[in-house]
Each structure stands twice: as C-alpha cells, then as structure tokens.
Image (tube, rainbow over all chains, first blue to last red; front, side, top):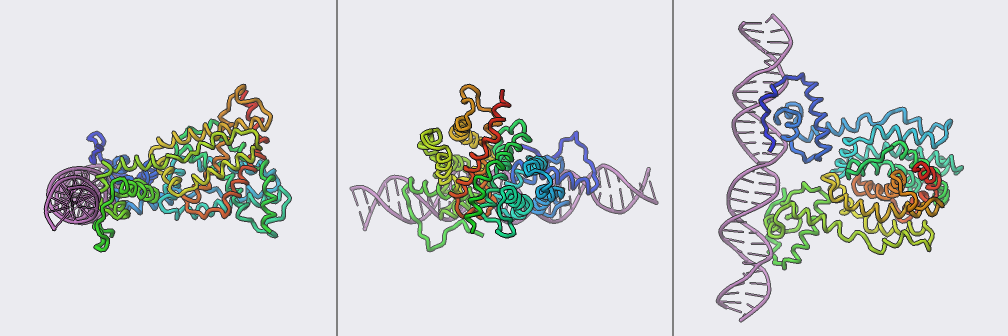
Length: 221
Length: 221
DNA sequence: TACGTAACTTATCAGATGATAAATAACATT
DNA sequence: AATGTTATTTATCATCTGATAAGTTACGTA
C-alpha cells in the first residue's frame, strides 16, 4: 500500500518549474509505458516523489498529461537524414536498407516508444495514423520504387504502386517491428545481435522480392 | 451516461445458468477486446442487458472473469491437423507453408483474438509465453528444419537450430502477424486479398532464405 | 535577517468502482 | 391456481480516483 505522503527523510525540495515539469513528463512516459494509460495519478506522483495534487499545477488534467506524453514520444523519432538515404542510387540497395533499418532500430527498439505506441493504438489509433503515414511515405513507398528499379520493372510514374506491392514492403517492416513487439510487449528475450538480425532480414527480403514482385506489378494492369 | 437500470420495455428474463454464463463470457470477450481489461463491470453488464451485481453470481470477481476470457480465447486456436502439415515432405515446402499460414490466418486474423493477445501481453505476458512456445515448437522450428532440408544444409540433429536461424523464421511470422496488428490494433484497412498477401510473403521468404541461411548455419560452428 | 512569492503539501470533495446483502419476480412443479 | 426455487434486481458499502481549495514552507531578494 503506497502512501500518499513522503518519507520523512526526503525533505521538501523546490525545483524551478521547467525542471519539475521535465521530471514529471519523463516519469509519466515511463509510468504509462509500463502500466498503460489507466495508471493512477497517485501512483505516478509517488514514483516522482511528489504529491498527487502537484501534478495539477503543471497539467490541468490527466488527459492533458497523456497528450504531452504522446507529443514527447512521437517527436524526433525521425532523423531527416533518412529522407535521402533510401533513394540514393549511388549505393547498392541492400547497403542502404541495412543502414536505414539499423539506424532506425536505434531510435525505435525502445521500451517506452514501442509500448506507448501499442497502447495508443489499442486505445484510439488516432495518433498512430499520422506516424504510419510517415512510414508509408518515407520508407515503404521509396522501398517499392527502389525495388522496381532493381528488378527492372516499370517506374512508379508509369504504373502506380499497387496495394499488394506496398503490402510486400509492409512485410519487411513487419519482420523489423514484430521483433520489438515480441521483446517489449510479450517480454521475450531479444536476439543477441540485433544488427545481424536486421542484416539477415534485409538480405532475405531483397533476395526474395524478385520472385514475387514482377507478378504483382503485372497483375496491376 | 449509461444507466444501471434496464429500459422498461425490456422485461426481466430468466435464463438457465449455462446460457447466461455463455452470454456473459461472449460479451466479456468482445468488451475487453475493445476497451482493455480496465473496462468497468457496470458498462459490461449494461451491454449484456443485465445488472452489474448479476455478474457476481456467475463469477466471484472481475479477475476471475478475465481469467475465463483468457481461457476461452486461447482454447482451440490450434488445429491438430497443422502438426503434420509443415513437416510433410511429400509436397513442396512453398505449398505447405502457404496452406498453413492461410489456414492459420482464418483462426487468428480476428479482432478479439489479436487485441486480447496484445492487451494480455502488455499487462503481464504470462499467458503469451505459453502460446508463443507453441508457435516456436510447432511452426518456427519445423520451418527451420524444412529450410535446412530445402537448402541442402546439415540436419538439425547434427547442428542444432541457432538463435539467429530461429530469428529468421520469426521474420516470416512477423510479416504475417504484423498485418493483424496493423489492422486490429492500429485500425488500418486490411489488404484486399489476404490469401494473396500471405502467398506473396511465403514465396518471398522461401526465395530469399537461401541467400542468408547458409551463412547463418556456418556461423554456428 | 526580514519578507514576499510561489512551489509544494494537507485536507477534502464528488463521482466512480468492485463487491455484498436483501428484496423481487419468473418459471417449473404440483 | 398455489407454491417453492432461484435467477435477477434494487439498495448500499468501502474504497478508489481525478480534481480543487486552502494552508505551509523553501528560497530569492532587499
């Protein structure tokens, strides 16, 4: 039974508002990632080492704190350098994709990110939409375009990307992201060498894609 | 504001206990799949069209009802016929894997199953362990064995399945399951032809596996 | 060292929530 | 039609929960 009061040893401390707010947000992210958004404000406060009403000096409601957690989590998970990485045809596609997904894994194979993303999706899915649109436009479509080029198929200008084709690229993304789900949601041990596993995924994907890609594009006519 | 009382039009109805219990469990599955396990007993009762205390005649606590939902959901999602499907070398491996994953999709591409599985994983992960062990032993290991055979590599008796190798098979499973996550957790539209998408996944996987599989097994020594 | 600002705590509320006890009424049997 | 059983409801409790108001004290400044 966690008490709402502080242990006598921890003396009351005044922080400047910016510091305290950062502290609250940081712990809120950790807390909601663990428990889910039904986590109670009293328990959160006790983890921070403050009293529950203090939260309401910094955020007008629990919902607004959750909103803030969303923002904080979604912000800056995308490195603008990646925009040009996948379409850069001066390098082999395998190399580009391996580099991208390894770099991306460093941003995204993260307890808090994965779990809050899942919780948010299961709750409403509204915020996930925006993020998945980003993935589609900045990763999956470029992958389809490069795949067309690699397999000497008509460019996406002449024949637009088909749903089924995009679904193929979602497959690569699924290999990648499901690893995070297994680890952070199902609590399974993570593979020893993540970079190697990603390398294998990409190699397998690119070696296998030609076997189905042509048929898909032809079915598109 | 849902009232706890019934509309006057709906007259009180006595069901025999077995029927009523089935009714409660069925709606509880739907309800917790939608809302999560923090869903309130009063709201559940109102959906069933009964009063909240009646739930407690059938289940001693909310937790025991959730336990029951777990059981109901995990029961009978595995068809014993599948045990012999993947290892049957009288047929081409592509064919076997396509048949298996299509059949499996009919059992598992399901709103209630996917969401309760995710909620349960995020909550404790205890029940998911059992299920994922099943997948590992009945799907992924057999896939690795068949892959060894197909690629003319040493059998799994002489060189045991390596973690990295199993991770490759998790990749195929990830393509498959992430599609369900996108649809049922993120609320994205599902691909028009699921069977075709699964066929593509399996073909790509088997066409691509040789490019990485040999290296993995050799690294194992 | 005194003083004022505001960060922080204590006290508390109103409504929600899981659970229990007692009252009611639907249905089977006679 | 009368009667007994029990499925179901009404009433209610103790605790929890998000949120507010009022009191307290740490700290910067003169």
